[in-house]
Length: 220
Ligand SMILES: Nc1nc2c(ncn2[C@@H]2O[C@H](COP(=O)(O)OP(=O)(O)O[C@H]3O[C@H](CO)[C@@H](O)[C@H](O)[C@@H]3O)[C@@H](O)[C@H]2O)c(=O)[nH]1
Ligand SMILES: [Mg+2]
Image (cartoon, rainbow, N blue to C red):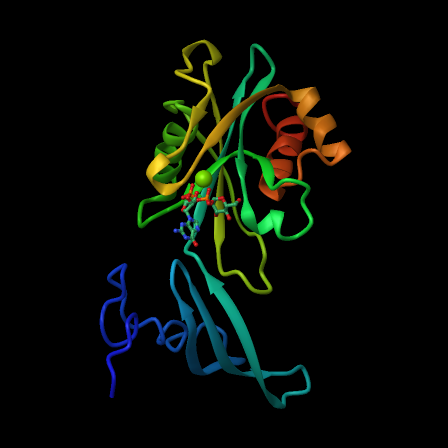
């Protein structure tokens, strides 16, 4: 048998056993995972899983589901309560460009993948890398699934005040990873009007801006 990277031998990220994820699941007595195939393992992992699902009638049916596993992520709304501003990022996102966005330049809250860190540690790191802000006090909001039909990712949401006078520059990101991030500081009302007009089209960002006026620092 040939050595298959990510399955029998480490892939470029040191991963093995990618074809076993899910076989151990026993929390739901109405679900039995019977087979896992790795369809692609490159930057992230695409799997096809075969499972038996007990339908409401009691009959067991076979289903196949593809999942895209990119690990989990975290995001933070940075807000300045005194100036009533939020600090967002703007960067090129190819997946949205290929799906009808005019230029792929998306306005988003700072966010990143956990890379094995605790979510709060990860978002402190990402906020510093992407915006130059060193977060002090931080509030945890929720941990939610953003695309539950196909993407496994759970996104951890936070909010934190920032001091707009202490910012270090107008751009961020890791150049070596091809990340080029512009900073966009907006009045909260302007940010909300950009949601209404469709200039902000990122789900996590919309959720956090609406939280800020419903339940957060700019509660009305
Ligand atoms: N070579 C290569 N690099 C990639 C690939 N995909 C992503 N990258 C690089 O890896 C970086 C990952 O940056 P992070 O800041 O850790 O993640 P993110 O892309 O900002 O993701 C965050 O936002 C997403 C969109 O809202 C979230 O889905 C995700 O959970 C996370 O919060 C990207 O900016 C990009 O440079 C790929 O397929 N190939
Ligand atoms: Mg990011």
